[in-house]
Image 1 (cartoon, rainbow, N blue to C red):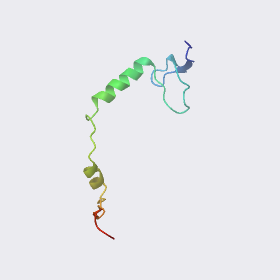
Image 2 (tube, helix red, strand yellow; image 1 turned 180 degrees about the vertical axis):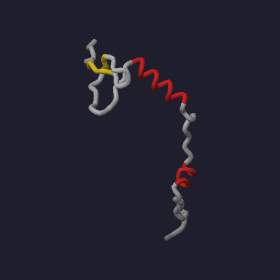
Image 3 (tube, rainbow, N blue to C red; image 1 turned 30 degrees about the horizontal axis):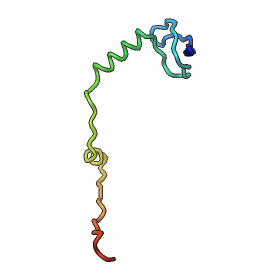
Length: 78
């Protein structure tokens, strides 16, 4: 098994040294295990619940009306 390359970084929140299994992107926050789990717990507590998608409401919310194509019978001559 090959070992993943670990990168030494400082946590954005508590400034402790930690390692991450990915190359950090400049400008994006990096969190240690403790701070990451704190943030994740907060995010779950503030969640509004499951997101549902209704196509009818999605179009209505933007003020767009959907126009159906006129139905054509496949049995008539043109």
